[in-house]
Length: 563
Ligand code: NA7
Image 1 (cartoon, rainbow, N blue to C red):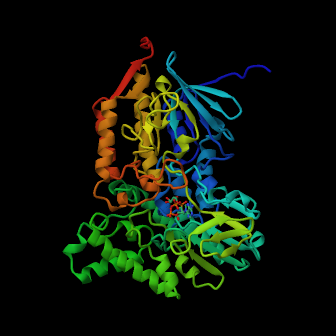
Image 2 (tube, helix red, strand yellow; image 1 turned 30 degrees about the vertical axis):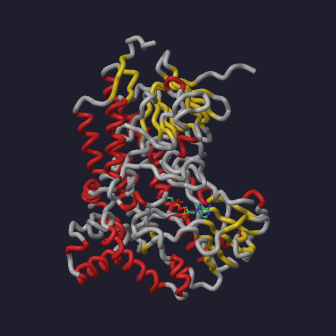
Image 3 (cartoon, rainbow, N blue to C red; image 1 turned 45 degrees about the horizontal axis):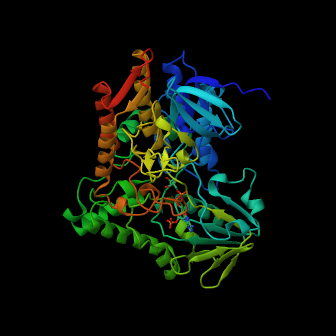
């Protein structure tokens, strides 16, 4: 067998979701003479919006804020049909961007990267895919997503189930719930944002025999208030795109909602109630992000708002015992990512929808025919849906075997079996600006750890702009090596940890605090995301650029690599 030729690039981008598509568009424009390639595991662009095809999947950010600002013509012709677009509409939008700008020709689909090795002798990365094909590149950009590695529940017997079973992000393409779920007993494990959307949609299907929901932790959830957008309305909205994007640029998470500057405890009961009712009636994240400024830093304020939200939930559920199970006890409202719903709570008023509260009756095991709980009940199921979330933030990095500078692994323990300390010990990322990491020269991350996530297209466009500027600086100065200093990484990581202090959300287990009990090594909280304001994040990135990229070390192409 002949040897496989190594493919050579200047920039390799991994992932063709929103981040990868945006990166490819900008970098190709900025560096027309560079060889740029995107490697994507799926058969299509779209990332999250391509994988997550479960029923009810839709965006919780306003559709109007979810477009790329770089294509104004498309913004002016695109008709978002709903104020919160379903998965299919967003995917169509991303596909349209890719077609219009002829991006697909530079994307290699159905290719999964398995390993990456830093080669000091020529300052390149050597990637290998599952088929053994190798790709050599000077720079690489991780656009792998922070919620892209599905995680299955660590429940005994999971492999024994004989019915159909799948994770929500691996929803079978040809499955039609009205046909394929007819007369079936459906089980759903998980009640995060995904579970809540899936359960509502599946339970709405009249032909389904029953839906049994296995809830380990109740989640706060609030009405989405989605509406259709007519063509006439869309024309008006198109006039406002600039102000929508300006608004997003002024808020901590780049959403269209700003907190009320008053503190809950400084206003009267009546004033509190007025604001709470007002935001409750508004669409989208208003009821999460548009509340009093101390709601997520003061326990007392949070308790008051949680009580208000609990009363709203109670009003919607017929059975008080079920309502009690659905109201979270372990955490206050908004201290986890708030799923938005369209009739979720009313779902439990249907006679064929059953809630198994795992706090009262934990799941014991999955059997060939269903799920057994510790009280001895066996729930017979034909289909089992795992809405059990993702190995978040560092998960996508875990699926690649890294041999970074000095042969160091990216993830692992402080002393791996080869005797080398991992760069991110125990899933605790160390980065500079969330864009670069020590011992990972020439790597840049878009929506990587320590970056603000928020409204994805908005935060992605900013990260891509910073990476493009940095690459421009490398090109202009003939640099083929860039790495942050350990001091810069230490300082930035301290800043990220500092930002997390005082936020109640950082005292709660969730993917946002790095906890996933189904993943080895993720049972303890870590600070893996930037929970400061995106406005401050952008200021710090701009400051770094203006300082001549202080905190980063560069080497020129012609200089010798130190031994
Ligand atoms: P999430 O928000 O991580 O939710 C996962 C859900 O699955 C959550 O309710 C978990 O309960 C539950 N889960 C996980 N493992 C188990 C086991 N072993 N047994 C029972 N229940 C389990 O993921 P989503 O996909 O819903 O949402 C992720 C993000 O995607 C979301 O925030 C949006 O930004 C888009 P737990 O709470 O851990 O007790």
